[in-house]
Length: 320
Ligand code: KPL
Image (cartoon, rainbow, N blue to C red; front, side, top):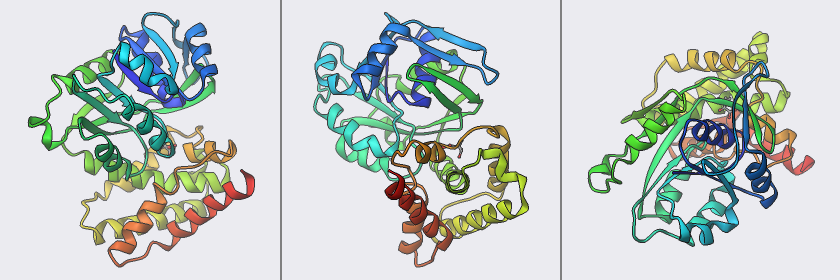
């Protein structure tokens, strides 16, 4: 069984595909209402063109419960393998719930699929008994309802294997999760270089997300105008300077990857645009905000990231 915390677009996509391929999934939602609907209707994953890719009914393979019930339900069937798929902003709440019922008898492995940086350290600190696996994904998903999601862009997922594994091996944790995800049809691999993947994804998100949120355009439209591409390149260059100042390895191919992500997810709304439109808290502080802080720590500046950070935060205050 895999426990998935967070039933937003990525949570529904992973839960739906995993359960449909025979892995038992327990999906933890924010609200009781969503858990009830999923338990009753199951999850539908749609292709980009609108056809049903998979539908899985609620039942033995797919259970859903509100996160507030974690302590009670976890005492009956303890979680062993957890995928946290909430936004960064929800990590505090998630930790409060799962810590209240920390497993004592068995070890626990947690894969974290958040955008941005800063959360892994928080989770490791709050939950030292767990083996925490940072992960990055470029899967594109768009939630259509409380129980349905469009698999909007085929991406890849890397799960980092920390060096401490020898000391804190959770059985065949990574192998189990890897096999289950592969069986579910995901392009997934284990990586010993996850840090590099995290910084690559951070830069991709720091360039694409705030601009799409400010201009309210789908990712592909960033490429429709030289002025927009110029702005993206400015953010990219500032980001690279921050990485250099912090001794972080980067690759000149990352610019091409940003272009590639825009093309591969051309019709998608970035998660930040979706949050802005929903008047929800965005991840801008964990993305552009973190880059600005890294710049300050290394004695350089990232002025364009700083301005976008403030603008996006300001939008929420005004509209929220
Ligand atoms: O991760 C993303 C997001 O929307 O958060 C992508 C698809 C890379 C767009 O920035």
